[in-house]
Image 1: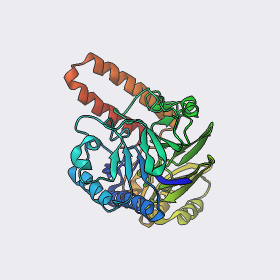
Image 2 (image 1 turned 90 degrees about the vertical axis):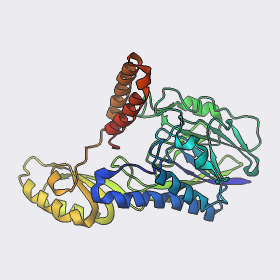
Image 3 (image 1 turned 30 degrees about the vertical axis):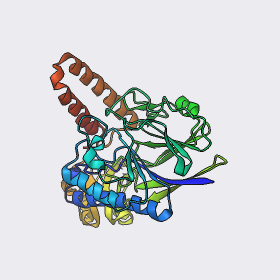
Image 4 (image 1 turned 45 degrees about the horizontal axis):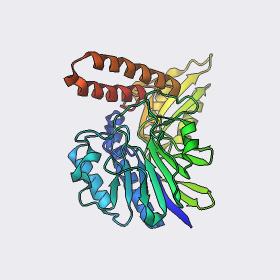
Length: 371
């Protein structure tokens, strides 16, 4: 017996992406298209369910038209159960979208994995047990999977969380750190994660650990294309994980060392695509002395992309974008920023706590380059 399902995360519906100027409207449409494609693929593939591991929405309080549109799309696919986990952008709090009855009303096939449902959740119709942890803030030093432990159940054991796996340079103290030792102890057949926008697969002990990636990129730190994953688990312990493309628009950085202006023309010629948002980050050889010609070439190619940002010649781009911070540097900045903000919050009037929470959310996004 096997179990097939769709794992997705980080749709960020309702995101404010005005930094992309005239391309923002098309990019927002692509986000909705990716959401629709995900549910349609699940229905057509015969997947048992869709598991969304956080940040379906970009905010706890999306505009009414955003939540209404999400409900309308969910209602089109009533035959496929959808399990939605709160993340760091749409975490559970008083009045937040994923805790509201009016959002889930009439959507009997949609289950919000919140405090009203105990983890693990038994799904006997799928011979499955689902372990989950709903985020109740946009930052935490506690592992969201610390309590996941395989129980006595003759079926599939699946975990769902939204946080940062503590590997490589991603040991951010306040970013819901997921300790690999907790993964090993869990004994899960599959751990579905959200929060990182790039697809990634790790094997920790006997558990496949998967970030599905963002279904439609909205920033230069995202991968070139968006995806969700189709998962098939077998009783022998094997896991087949297949990326399913859902993104219409790619968001890419073109970083090259330039020796001659003709090289720039060739690079842009090869990359040109009306469904691509591109940032050019050129460095130059020591004897290069033709920056004006490069600027002219870049400007001439701008209409051949959906949107172009150039680090060296912002006047030719129609928009200005910050260079992305390296992951380790951004993590250090965020940790320091949140520490200082918590100190201020503790010393101030408790009635102003909400202001500090908003400052933490906006400041963190600014440091990450997501705003």
